[in-house]
Image 1 (tube, one colour):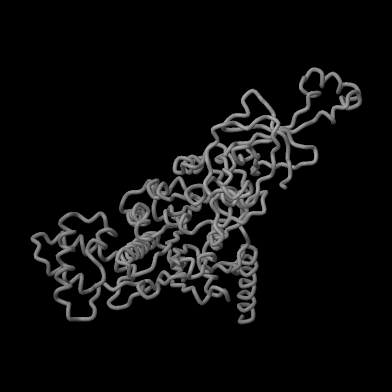
Image 2 (cartoon, rainbow, N blue to C red):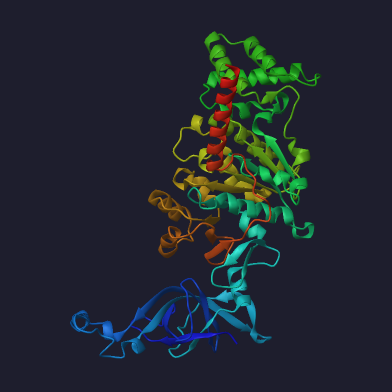
Length: 513
């Protein structure tokens, strides 16, 4: 028997088919956000505590309270404390019908409430099994944390969470990387019989490199320095280079296409050819205007400076290295140029998507940190060369098992197209009003009540809303299993090391003199 929390009462607007109110028993404790249930003849009514009020009739009239407080106070004249009571407002979420197996067995589907509950019925704390079924949790789902106020682990179905894409949104320091690491642990821990996917992480600040050194996950992890990423020219199509250089004119595009096709035919019997060969092929192209060639070669020289187009070297080798249950981390912390990062993200994302469409690599999750830098909403095409492929995967990826996880601390700068295609949002603390408005417009499951709660979240608390759960739910993110190890020491340690090194150098200079 579950704890009886209180009794349903009549108010001017309830009970209705959408909400009801109840008075708390003196010895019961009810919290905002808690789930409750009411047993009825047609099933079990399930609800969510949306607000709690305290009342006391002795303190309803301000002039009376003020008068008594001038002297010895209200409590000395009346038993006011015994008249205090607490009213709880409950939003009705649905009814769990009794199955044929008896009143204690619940069907997996919940019906809408078409009849309000009767005043006088007892309100109980929600049954944990009923809560698990209602929210859509699974025993073999990703365990990301626990439900607030209930002893129910948040185990979310992998397919529902990532197949239609995921967005993790929060301000800096709210726990995005921690939550992402928990998600990666769940993917790496997943058993073969439950279905495993590969993971590729675009790691901007080296926050995930610790997985490589972890005793449990190191064997499943490969870290690739962003400056060591390379692709042979022979594996590239003209359209790929054109997407990186969107400002090319139509004549320049034609010259590039002709030069690459001609080069491929001339070098078909050779193992490799490089950037110099491409520039020579451009020069040999039969074009009446030399300024077209010169402008094209200047644009191509930019790509040459980035040093990722090679003759033979391919890193990573996606077909062999992207494997189920494995983690590939592309560490961009050593790259300063944002444009180079965008081009690399565009290249890797497009190749992953194309290989997946051909079924040459397993279903995968592409996790993009600082996603607003790679799919920027208000940016010209030449300043957001990776936006197009990210939006393409967002629109079409679910059909092929190509999933996205976009992580951002500035949702207002993130492509609305990409963000709206993320059918599940996990939102940690956000305080910027512009970001809050953008999140609310991009997520259908966020109402005004949830939007107000986002600013009050503490570090490690999150709201899960969208396709992954049947109803928006507050979750306390669990602790990591892996050891946190990232590039860069804590600020105080960096300060100490700087001064120590400076003192050493000064001592060495003095000793030398």
